[in-house]
Image (tube, rainbow, N blue to C red; front, side, top):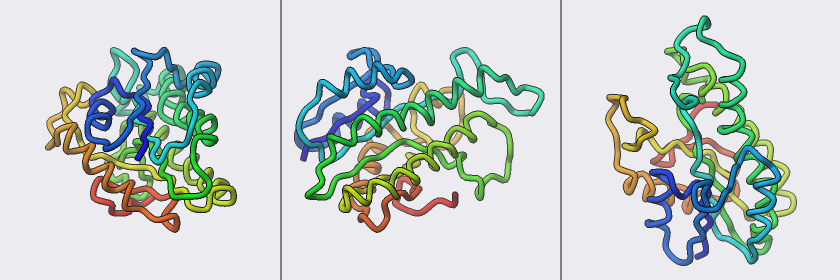
Length: 215
């Protein structure tokens, strides 16, 4: 089993590196200069890799730009914040998939997962707020679902998935009082879900237990 973890310096990413069996290639902005919002950077770093990967997991994301919190009302909407959230949470993982597709084998099963979030579900949104984060994760789900349709034609055994890890105890969730799981537990759950999905389930949106989440 050969895995590639993008965002390996974050709480969940580092735990995925520790929990994944077999060979693991770990990439991050901190260690490798990988800026997922810059296609030149993505092409350069991923272009240096060779061979096939059985798993590729993009463990990146941002709840809000540094020093800011999620918007709770329309009055708080800021164009720059919206664009920053879309760049990190939606465009970045899509660029990784674009340049990592050549690393997925065509002749056997392989998984590609991104970290989405339940709050990106339109059908499950009964509270409102968190405009940019919600919208950017919903956009991510659409990008991955759309790519799964296309990739199934060239990689019929590939599985693409949007995964909700639950609320994980990392710096990302500091200050939030919801029940949390440890990064190690979240990583084990995510790997189990990704490894358990079939090609027929490719393009779906699942929680940490493998249960489908409404779009």
